[in-house]
Image 1 (cartoon, rainbow, N blue to C red):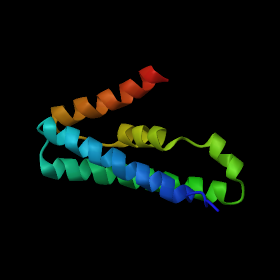
Image 2: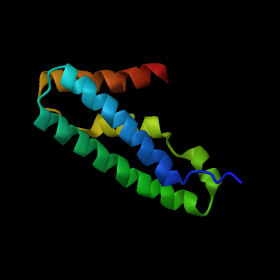
Image 3: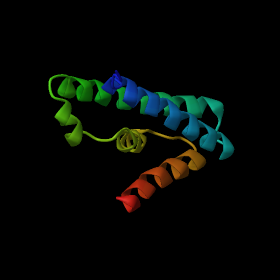
Image 4: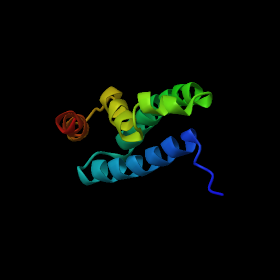
Length: 104
């Protein structure tokens, strides 16, 4: 019998994949390693705090998943809260957020 993935696992796996992609893009844009690490830590902190809220909300009611943000939406929301120092990082993070807004 197939057992569905736990909500937390679903979100943390998505964070890992999206963070690796963002890390690569920031490096390609010329952002320094230290700033990349700070940005990713900021995003992960905001993201995981919200994941804990989502897990709590969904523990008793899996239908609550319909009302919470998707992993990608949560990642983009966390990017919007992240602070960047360099113009390259600010521009890339801004493009992520505006692309999501345009898409929605």
